[in-house]
Length: 318
Image (cartoon, rainbow, N blue to C red):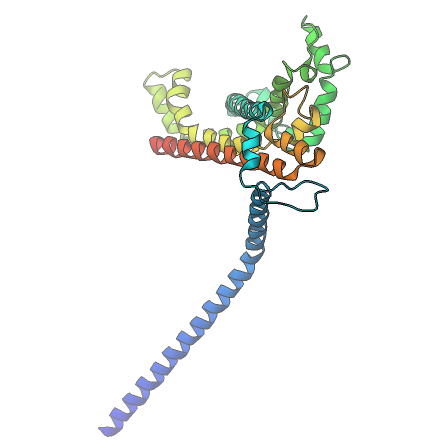
């Protein structure tokens, strides 16, 4: 009897030891996995911290009188912002930034929806355009700017030649302050409408065909089906594309600087271009940093508003 008890105790001790060793091995494996996870995330975290450091350093620069050639830098608080608010050029840049971004995103959403509906059909034009629709997106923005500058030349540009074939007189395009902003919006729409089209097309492809068939059975016409069924279902896709495009349009620099450099006059001098001119041509780095911080605040407010609208629409659709 004692032998049986001793055997049971030995067996219990051995099983307990095995369980403890297995737990130790599991802890070791988990610790190894944690180290591997940290090592995998380290580059991304380092890059993120680097961007945050540069951003906060830029905010600090906007609170100083940093200027090229000045040996001492003084902390001046919000003086740069107060000086900007008092100038008409600053408010002109804010207006140009909002007009450019709002017009471009709205036009891209409309034309992107039209292209997406075209791609959803089986017409020959849709088959031809599908392979080449991404071409504007893969071109460098500065190359796009130079190409359109040549095409919009008032004297020898191909755009005025095409207009002349339709009986329309010469158009000033980017050479006139009254038409320069419109011309830039045209360039931006040509470049980035495919982005809207692809995302909207993905939303259309995700709609169950049974929903459309049910609408047809109930007597709904094609336009009613689109307006009451398809458009509400793809609205979240359109809005999420608008969020990304709004961020990039508010920060747009390459296309504008490559075509007009903020001119003629100040008609296209958006905040990003004015900040570049202030910092790297006028060498007032503190004032230029203040302009970029203001631009960042506008981007933040616009993005937050668009994301809230996207969440509201998504909940309604769900």
